[in-house]
Image (cartoon, rainbow, N blue to C red; front, side, top):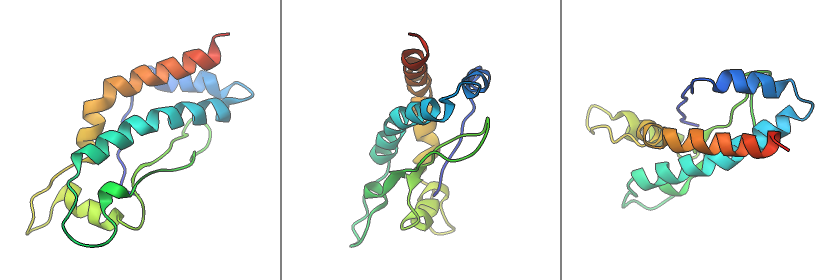
Length: 128
């Protein structure tokens, strides 16, 4: 899956504290699952549907299950294996086609909203 990652100041420390809780995986997974649709929608809005028949990248942006271990838990948001190869050509371009990035710009555009949503979800789960 073609993905991008971004570090948020203070988030690593907060997640390290969450990892100490007995239900840490559940809290982290719920937080990431609630944040992922924001990024998925933004990616979909930034990619142009081709005129060719078949599965289009725009219709194939997926959200993975929770991955990683310890302090390095994450989910992936991006084209599935079915269209990932096409997504790389669109994101980075080729010698014949200019790049039309949709993953990186989606992260940049939604960074603030992603951080805010993470904070809301974590606060809802951690503050009784």
